[in-house]
Image (cartoon, rainbow over all chains, first blue to last red; front, side, top):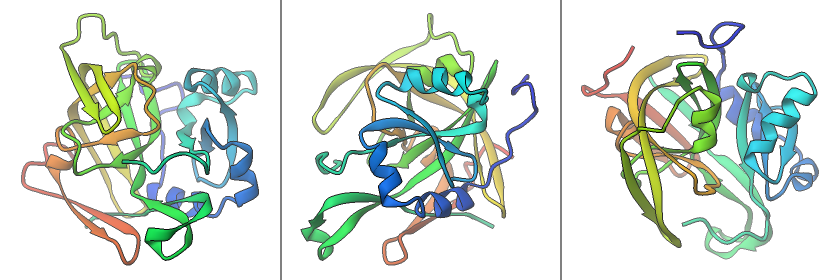
Length: 83
Length: 151
């Protein structure tokens, strides 16, 4: 099976989660209500878009392989409680 | 050995009364890799003990090269979410930390519905793990059980 052109993606989910929680509130606010791509270590938001499908388009436009990021979503602070 | 993750701390504008006025909502969101015939995609996904199935958006199937044209179909629903189409396919799922990596084959659902988060439910994921949700520490620990089929 061909995982991708660069071999298996190595990632540390625990480190990702810890770093993701350290992203400053101001930076998260810029992407609220959008789908995002985080760096593999969770330290940065690389791109964001209103539609999930557009995230990969934006990644490729800046030369980033979409298989080398973690895709996620930043809820808007006004969104309803998640049930 | 086990896989341990901190909860995601979602920032909110208004204090959460039920959490003593905190300005965050802790959630067990963890990163998971989905491997298909043409690639891998990493997604944040919600560990949900109330979900019957493991579900991703159809965009994930496209990203990993899965053709869902003739896939077995089902439907799913959630609170505030009407019935949505699910198309099922077998993929490889991978969880990894610096301490441990687990990889297994699972049948998961793909939906065109605009989910905010992928869902790691019983079938395909939690059936294979004993999950300890430490509310006080806001972390979750997953340990493989006897049903775990992977490596």
